[in-house]
Length: 470
Image (cartoon, rainbow, N blue to C red; front, side):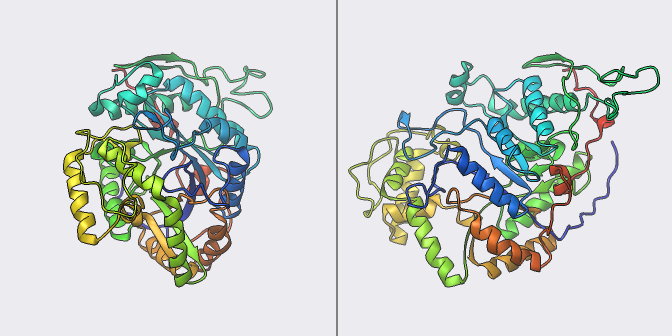
C-alpha cells in the first residue's frame, strides 16, 4: 500500500454546491414566490444561477418510492422527483461548467448499467458528472422493485463497495490513448481502428449479490470518470467514503463539529491508503441572508413560519404517534395520549425511521412543557436544521465562512435553497462577491471538468485494476 503524508494543508478556499430538494419541511412551497418543483424551468433557473455564481456542483436527490403518511401518499411532502440522470442530461445542454451530481442507489441498480449511464452523462457534459452513492436496505422501498428487504442492514456497505469497485473498473477499462483524434488509435499497424487493439479490457466480478462479465462500451470522459460523492455518517459509511469517495456530503456544518469531522475523515483516509486531502467535505447547509443582521432575523422568522405551518406540524407529530391527531390544536400543548406504534417507520424518510415512539414522545412532552412551547413552536424548532443554518448579513456570514476556509474545516457547502426557483439569487448576488473580496472563493472556474474545479486528482487507471472476485 502506498504511503502518504499525514499532513493536511487547508486550501484556504471554499466551493459551493446546490441541492435541489423537492418539497419537504425545508422548502417553502405555498408562498406566492414558490415555483414548480418538477418543471424543467425551475431546474434550469437554479442551475444557471448557480453557474453564474461559480458553484462547483448542482446536486439532485433520488426518491425510489413516493413518501407516505399513515399509509397514504404524503400530500405535504415530496411531490415526486424527475429522474436525476434525465434531468442532468437536459441541464448539461444549458450549462457549461457546473458539475452535475446524481444520487443513485447501489441496492436497486445494476452496476454495469449504472456505470454506463453515468459514463454517458459524463461524456455528454464534457466531464461534469458526479454520482452520490447511497444505499437502502428497508423492505418498504424494496417492494417497489419486487425485492423487499433482501439486503441486511449490516451488509449494505459491503454490497455498495463491491458495486462501486465494479463501476470504477468499468470506467477505467478504456486506456487513455484508446482513441486517436485522427482516427489512428494505438500504434503502427492499427491505423483506422477504433479503439486501438488491446485498449479495452473486460471487467469480471463474481460476488454474493451479482455477477458481471462485461465489456465496457464507452471511453473515458475528459475527467476520466464521474466524481464520487457519499453522504452516510455511520462509522461504516465514513470508512466507505474514505476508501471510495471524492467528496463527502456531510451533516456537520457547525464549526467545531466540522473540525472534528475533518480530523476523523483524515484519519480514516490515511488508514485507507489515500492522501490526507483525498476526500473533500461539503456539509449540507441553509443560508438565510439579508443586508443587515436584523433583517436576516426577520427573514428567518418568515422562513420558519412558511416552512412549517399548522398542517405540517400536526403531520410531523402524527408520524411519531402513528395515529391521526387532527383534533389537536397546533397552538396548544403536545398530545397527552400514547402513540399507536412502538417504533416509527421509514415511510417518511430516514429521519423518521426507528424511533422508540413511547420513550420519544414522553421526552418531547416534557421538553415542550419546560420550554412553554406549543405544538407549532415545538415542531418548528425540531424540524429546522438550526445547526445547518447560516443566518445573518452578507458580510457577517462571509466572515464566518472565511474562518472555515482558513483552518480547512470544510472544502465548501452544499446549499439547500428554501425557495425554488429564486433561492440562490441573494447568495450569488451578494454573498459570493463578499467571499471573493476575502479571497476565499473562486473568481473563475479553474477548468472545464468537475474534477478540475474541485481540485481532485485524476483517477489512477493502473491502480484500479479488476474488481476483486469474491
